[in-house]
Picture 1 (tube, one colour):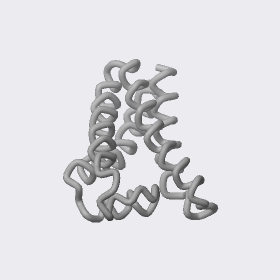
Picture 2: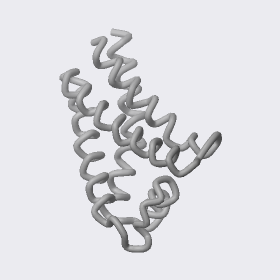
Picture 3: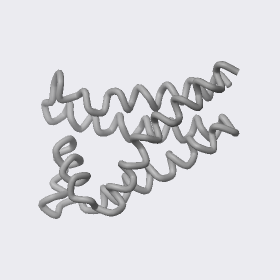
Length: 125
């Protein structure tokens, strides 16, 4: 029962990040695009790689839906959490390649940790 409660709490926390990210990317909200460009240096604001926000928004939507279903079906939650972890890890890799260090990496590190925590909690269940 405790692991179930923990899984729900972690799922809610992960969804609080993933859902707004999905909405921001799919609607191409200016603040979301600015943040994506700041972290990944893809040049989206200059009109380059415009397909990336759509792809990320779609992946966040799929991951969020799977994580939510994972409350009742843990294997689906594992897949969703793995997808979310992959997205957050990709952003961190882009930051490292761009030379970010220290505090600059803090933005997505907790999100990656949260996705991995959901994955573990669902795997334990």
